[in-house]
Image (cartoon, rainbow, N blue to C red; front, side, top):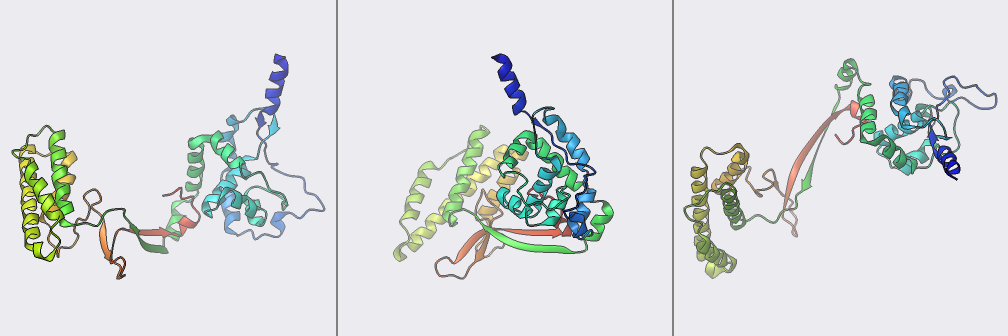
Length: 314
């Protein structure tokens, strides 16, 4: 009985399948190289990739007996094409049948009319090679480009700018001042600094006044309460900085942001709208339902190499 199960396990093992180096040509089949352009980008790229080295890297992951696996060049080639053209697992396999250049890139000699494998095999292959194997494939694609190639391609640069809306509440002076007080007390508690005064009762009263002081008859009361809350925040900040002196490096950046919040004026440029996201910018949209938008501004510049390299999210 045990011998039966051992034989069954051996038959279920996967053996590495290799593409023929010099396949025997058939009379009634058309060779891919007879009708594709040899100077096509994918044809040139296929010559530069060291497929033998990749096969040696992944060969120990397969057994010596069992059913043949998918050839390394086929599945690795489709992984590279999938990343270069930003496609899904099912889409890249479907397009493989339509494109002879893709089939040549993956090592085929004749034009294929059937899918090379099921799209779910991508998942099994990734589990087999693990993240370290994906890094080897990525390194292989990066090593293709020598310095002369890079110098030729960086002549053309593509630049694009976009914005990403941040998930922050609408900033007000009251909110930012309260956040400064909270951060100062948190730092004092963490560093065992005893503040001279915490102004707990005064802050509670001022918050109550600011909450119900939006009517026209209470504008002066609202302004006085806001000014008093700002003075209290500045006193707590000054007390904390004085007792922390010299200031630890871990708090330098945060305390600088808090100081900018306390000293910024209404018409200043590069204002702080969020303490935890100090790089947020305010952009006027000019729309009635939402006049302002708080975003991060991002600029991207890339060369033609981006079209050929496997970016891996970089």
